[in-house]
Length: 519
Image 1 (spheres, rainbow, N blue to C red):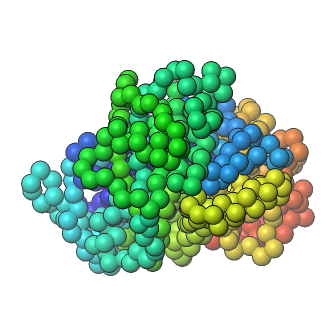
Image 2 (image 1 turned 45 degrees about the vertical axis):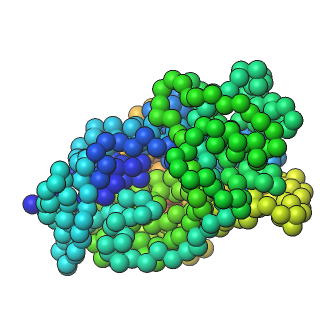
């Protein structure tokens, strides 16, 4: 038996990819070397464009979001522990969603199983080889080795990816050894918490706002009081040898005192776990030399790791999965235009490079030293300017990423995720996010006549077609890929006045569709 796709890794990225493939009619096999789901909270939430992307797959409310569309943070955020006043912006691109990684993985695991994916626990890949037709994978399970074959193998198995290493794909980048990071769930006296703002009031230091990191000359501190859970503390110390042996709560308390110059008494974690208590030395920023080698593809941390790897790396990896899933499925089903799968590396490398840039910039601004402190003072002045705040907000949210859709002089919407419009259609009122949950190509005709929708009726087996009306439409018609990025758009009010060259090109480039003719 030859599987269509084997995914190495049952973390959030591998599970998200499994769901994306299943939505496209492919039943993937997920192999995970662990015998049960990991309880390690490497990331504690989602930030940026990934939040509305979760909504576009029906996952936002399942992850604890309130009913309705996600709302951006239009108040206060941080960049390198410097205040980022998002209220200066006409519309903030920064979305926040507090969800510990184990809870995220559980929701994604349930979703993948509902859609028909298969997950095998305690299955460790020990060997990989590939030929023209398939990838052969040696898998060790319960002391026995079995050999599996698949048309494609996706490595979503983390920064130490066995798939990447066994495939001989280089992982160039930079290693850092100056910092020690500690993370722990710990209880604190209720008297330290401001009941109005949730901020910590630390005697001898001052106020520490929740979820907003701070920097001192000795390191950094973040305080994350997730609702219904023991608060999470994280410290970073610079140029100070770490203790040996297992991490302890006393070590965490001492680290906080060192960073702040003031003490916070910590108690043991209570309530539902898992509870973090860990120490990490150094870090890495690396991007794989290639995200695809013939029938082996990398996603998530297997393809790129960031010096601030938790949340930003997770956000990047989940969007890798949404970009890859529909392309890989089209390739397997024989519906992919020439070179479609190659665009995964091209597009996601753009996103990875931007994430690396912002991660390394924040790392540099958080480092100790009088020169860095002076640079931070200048940077803080720049962040009082709305245009600068917009650029930084776009960078950290990923909304500045634009894909090249191969359209000369494209419409401003082309290459970006489609806006989440409210539409009145023949079937009732709906949002673009709700229309996107089947992960199919989508033509939105927002004109009065519906001529674009009518012209694309012959492609109804390949493209979902919706004719609707909305207030102040941003375009007359839009063609969306399954990942909801806009492949083509026009302001022409009807088919007769539109330049159809771009539409024909988009249909052929992304969906291998037959050229459209005027009605």
